[in-house]
Amino acid sequence: MHALDPALSAGSVAQCTSLHGQLVEEVSKDKKASNKKIISLARQNLSYCHEHMNRDLYIVNLRLLALNLNSDNQHLEALDVTNRCLEINDKELFCLAQKADALLHLGRVSQ
Image 1 (tube, helix red, strand yellow):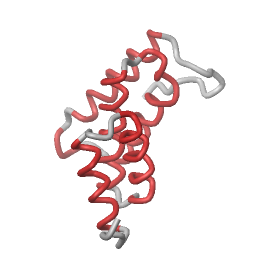
Image 2 (tube, helix red, strand yellow):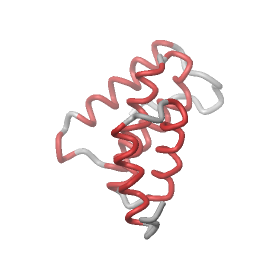
Image 3 (cartoon, helix red, strand yellow):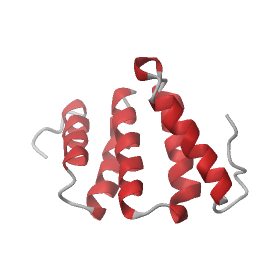
Image 4 (cartoon, helix red, strand yellow):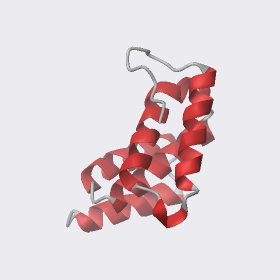
């Protein structure tokens, strides 16, 4: 994996294209994909490449991060990510479902 230089506030288009390619490749591995690796790549993509994403691609990355955080039992972080997603689009069904999953695992069903 060629991670972006953390000193950069934003990645170049070439770096972001490479990072996106790595993320797609990891997700495409089907069940062999590592949640932790996808989480890391998605976080990098959201942190360094958000300036190169349109609204829909940004939401897709949030959805992917939330799904993998929930799958990795990081439910509180998944809840934070789904809330960010829902701030952008409060009718985003996938984010609503991931939020419900996180709340269920956190024992906060009434919310």
